[in-house]
Amino acid sequence: MSGKLEGQTAIVTGGGRGIGRAIALVLAREGATVVIASRTVSEVERTVADIKGQGGKAIAVPTDVMSKKSVDALVAATLAETKRIDIVVNNAGIFVWKGFAQLEEEEWDRILATNLKSAYLLTQAALPALTNSGKGNVVNISSIHGLVGDANFTAHCAAKFGLIGLTKALAEELREVGIRVNAVNPGQTDNKNLDIAPAARAKPLKEILNATDIAEAVLFLASPAAAAITGSVIDVWGGTTAAVKTF
Image (tube, rainbow, N blue to C red; front, side):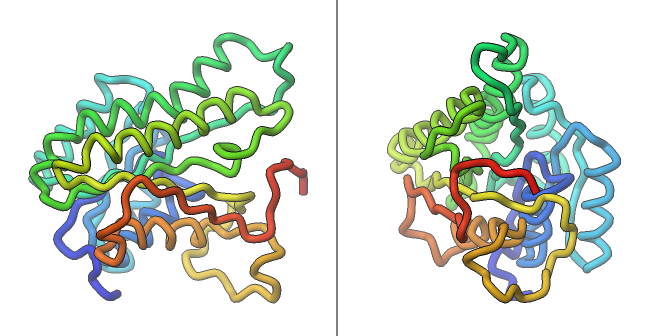
């Protein structure tokens, strides 16, 4: 532990599993108090227990990121507990693999709300605290599908392209108050491996990514090392491509 984020508070949505869990573990490793927000209570509590088991600081706040009321409650609970918000990681996301002609309106709305609207809700709710921090930091988790369109992923691509647009526009708008806004675009990632320190891979640029690969990129953007970076998008693709394959 190097303590790069010591004394800071980070909110991570979708932090109960996969990429969000890895991000929470890595930020906690560096000294941040991590507030983990997700709808699945058992997953949130498991991640919090793992962080505390490693000597870190974490808080579980079950949250429906599609609900303004729930997101506002998340921010209020965070401030009541830690008195500050320094980092927001908008990671929550879902997708449906389905042809455009068959895509239901409810599916379209749910995908856009989870992947894009949630970032608007949380960033806006946390904005006063991020401004007060003096080093506010927003990291949006987009996707390889935020830059490259793919068949049967129209709603997902629309949401992730939109998240990159939000990132760049918001970076310009919040520059004057000292808040940095950046994004990470993961390639195909193994969201099932819960190991925070996976074994070294023989071909690191030719295999499916580990969630920790994404988390380390988020840590860089959230750390003082990236103090001059805003409005940027980091592609963490390894050797993956946009086409979704089954394994």
